[in-house]
Length: 71
Image: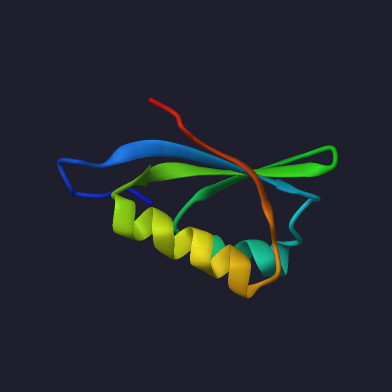
């Protein structure tokens, strides 16, 4: 998710498990990196958009293991 917001920052969210292609499509505005036993979602966003991604994860029953600024 590339944001035109001058206050945008890079983020990384690590979740348990490898998100399927179908679940990953719910996050087309971020980059997904599937690793052994984990998926890393990353992108550039403002706080409101980051909150939206976190809410979408919760709605799908996916618990973040970590959320970090990637700056």
